[in-house]
Length: 197
Image 1: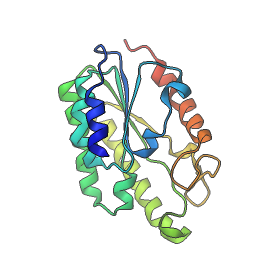
Image 2 (image 1 turned 90 degrees about the vertical axis):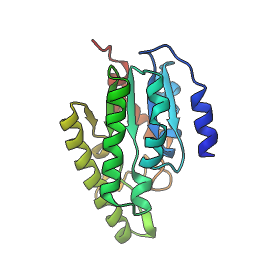
Image 3 (image 1 turned 180 degrees about the vertical axis):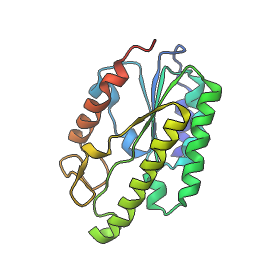
Image 4 (image 1 turned 90 degrees about the horizontal axis):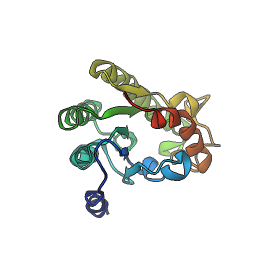
């Protein structure tokens, strides 16, 4: 499945400095970008079940498009599979470095990971994952500052008390509902539509 998606992504052709690429896991894959953002230049490179390591392996496909903008959201599957934080951080650093080296004109936007509910089966186990999401987001904010790129903090707009995701925004405690995608769209539409100097 992963390889089939990658093969399809390699077939995408767009003029340099036009594409707005969204890359990530199932949360990105489920984002109907053109409907929600009303922008025909958006490209969805989300793959369900993907990890930071998977995005790192295929970031070259996005970079070859020389996109105007690239939006990254990845990491929740790493956390749910208990992948070491340092490995996640290293993968993110390499993803950013690759884009900066191979398409230096591309604007990079790192989007925060979102809260979850009942991961592991109950509230107590969910807190373990929620803490890791928070820690990753803190790291990502610092990484963006260090690299002079934009961190888009979506997290607060999806959180309810208990470090859980708003049930109006997700249908299973993790994956977004259509309302969740509307919230996301509202938060980023100005960034997506902004004309870069």
